Length: 245
Image (cartoon, rainbow, N blue to C red; front, side):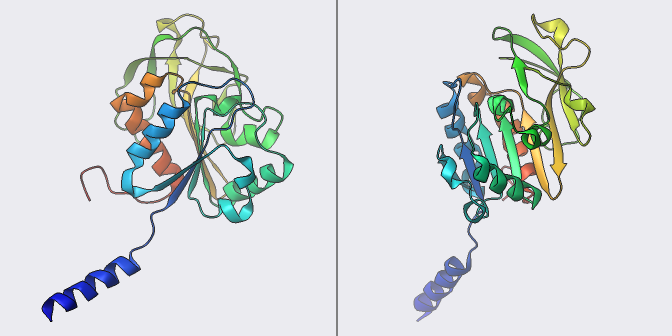
């Protein structure tokens, strides 16, 4: 009898347990395709674990009001080129401004160059890069969850983008880190070169990191936690710290 009661209680707990918040990882490319996309996809699923349910797609037809409403955050994982049509753009804009979250990784800034709203949302567009090389990232704001684990000067190897404009000069952009162009060749933005930032878009949140070109990025513990915390922040969902459940 006790066993039956226990099973009934456990069944009730399982029945009422809420579904985890969902993340949509979008990796469609209409230009250069990064070989690291599968590594990034695998990494995101790993770092979010059971805290989120992760769906991966390259199908832009999933950008509808109804479908996007299922997700707390949409990650553009090294997307390139024009990947959304006008109706899909409209649905995505409404989703973000109504409280949805956005995370842009690396080539997300090389996406939708002709869409002014997207540029405001992501902050800037890709304008070029030098060869992959080691450089120093100067972390300006360590109060944000996505940079709290980083050292003040973070040395790592990646493909360092320069941008068509300085996102620091865009209203609403909060810069988290910038490049130290004295530590590598070909930076192209010597006066001020932001490489991580966030902003709000009405009720929504947008977070961007320029890292993630290399496959190795997605096995670096610091970069992985940086990315994890960026996704959690953009989702606006409270998630226990690792090991604190």
